[in-house]
Image (tube, rainbow, N blue to C red; front, side, top):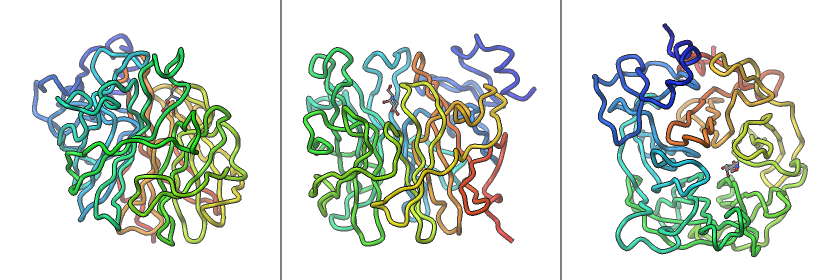
Length: 364
Ligand code: DGJ
């Protein structure tokens, strides 16, 4: 029986380790009971065991190519903790040669390491890590949304947030914490964010401004460690657009994002501009089809929320739209949706597929 059918029939079993093919889906602390499987296709929304047979624990993630290898950095969730608790142990790295089979390389930023900076050790949330290579300093920079402890952040702990940074000379880390800045130079800081390298070499921090939730951008310093300009609103982007992910196609820049509804899914948003700085024009929801696992379609982004759009190296017009399936009551078992971005009538379309592989990008 296909595992999504099995899961639909046995929803209560989801809290338990799930038998998936010949592998076991559980927290990374658990040992697999059988031999791990080799993936030959992407299966959006399905458990995604790593090469040890353990579901990948790297959420709100980004992917980076270094010398032909792929690096997946994501927030490592702690088993048994909900999103209402401090539930992130840091940033975990997985490495792959084919984007399908991922080897767990462990924690590259450790919130609980002896001597960890108090801003890390006390952080309430460490969310949405994004890694880039900085050409000027030749360092890998890891950016993340860093919420101070609840007692410093108001009653919800989410009233303001910092942008945390850590650097490493190698993609495998460990990353050294380098402090934080307040996005938008605002006392409230910013929330969900993206880092975008423009064609002229400028690196931008784009983020949801608190408290009004406009999407704003500021240019970062050459070393990538602080904003060096004023922030401006990205004109044309609908207010309360979060989970931003940018990609370029020719001379157009596209922005994939979500609306704002906490951890619950909402319709995906897509915008296009002639230059990164805008102005942007709204396009139709790019999602098409239905996720048969949860029966959710475009009005709920198949149950996901955007986190990154990855241009597949070495291929023309090949992007993977990457989403988290948030699971606030059990975030370690939250899932992933990876789907190709296609262009139809010059508009991006993200069509649901139960299975797919990179051959979809083989153009005639
Ligand atoms: C949606 C954001 O995209 C997530 O990263 C997280 O901050 C939740 N909101 C919190 O409600």
